[in-house]
Image 1 (spheres, one colour):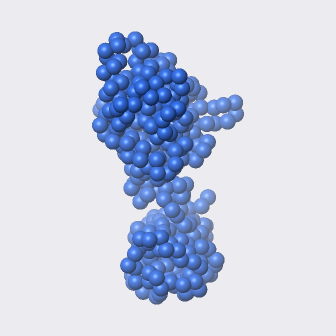
Image 2 (cartoon, helix red, strand yellow):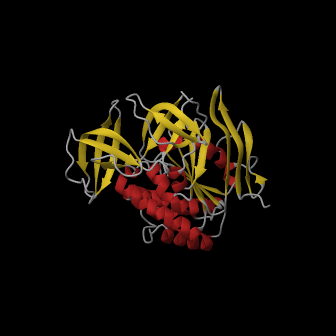
Length: 362
């Protein structure tokens, strides 16, 4: 069996008594775009900086094509890097900024000119090679930074929250460009973000970081449909969790009883639960329905409408359970109740227990 293209092998980093990363283990195939997603301080940027060579791990290894790169200085690892701030040289033109890593590598002038022209075309900035960075928009500056990182054809490109300084519309435009550039070049990209929408839009796979560890790795649909932990379920997508007592537990499924006496149909359970213990039912806004009657063959819960907001192609309805917990539901345009829901209405939240899940609480 061949070794993976890039292997982050049990990397641990400790600063004094603070554990920044703890046994991070991940394999990346050549040409993948893998996002490190998680809250601030979860270890994702630290892992990236260790890979770049800016920091040394306390323990573990990083291998490319089966060979450790830890002893190689950062400037010789042939790894491109794009930062949150554009880090362009303000006294150099766009073309000179892009050419800088080529001059450091002592390439001849004709090859430098050819590569800079190709890099400008790749990021769609042809004709701006003589412009100074101060005359560029934020999006254009980030394109220059991306061109500079790619101009010498690095096998791996690292991106540390490169779009966080841009406004929403510009972020989305550059995200489309990053996907296009990734597809055109085939470069392996590791991308750090705390924005789940950005991760879902860009990634082939996503590694969810939490407290220095990777909680789960998978495609966006895999993480959304089958979250392995409560943290992943809460971090990916919008979620409501209903905490209840475990009334029945059998064959990996759990039936919950809530404080108003309502007991629900069994759903699959993540984690180790016990009868009489507590678990939380996960409800996604678009996976539940709202009806005037319980009806149907699925599970249902009586609720009272608190608010309904029109969003154009959908309505966002806020309801409250008999024990006082809020649930948010998204119903599509054309729903039988669309436009007829008002505050105080008695309704029923319904869902399919076969596709629902719960998480045991420790």
